[in-house]
Length: 148
Image (cartoon, rainbow, N blue to C red):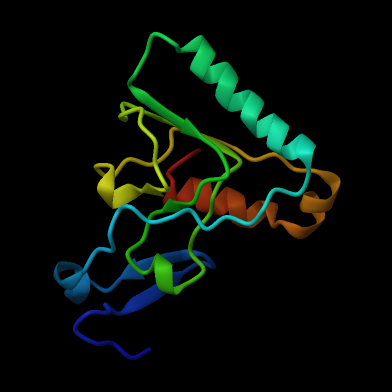
């Protein structure tokens, strides 16, 4: 892999997690944090309704709180190399605790004090269960997003 002064060398561990070479860590140019979400359209009205129901229920249950962020089908950017690769996932529903409750175009971990979602929910229909890799999503949330 070729490198330049603005692109750190990246090594892949496993199938999904990029690691930045130690010599390049100080040279990282972080992308802007106001990136637009880049998620594909939802596959059905039911899928959209389920996501909306989860968000509305949590916001209603925690209506007296302003210290969390809940969203769905929104890209979570977690790597400075992500914009140039396939290392991104937008969960169907996610919650981040101790976060400012404000509108966002996406969740950029480096702009949010290094915070990853505390809860991630993926909804699978018959068709998405056939096309989405459960093991890959599990590994992503377990290894990169640090969920057990």
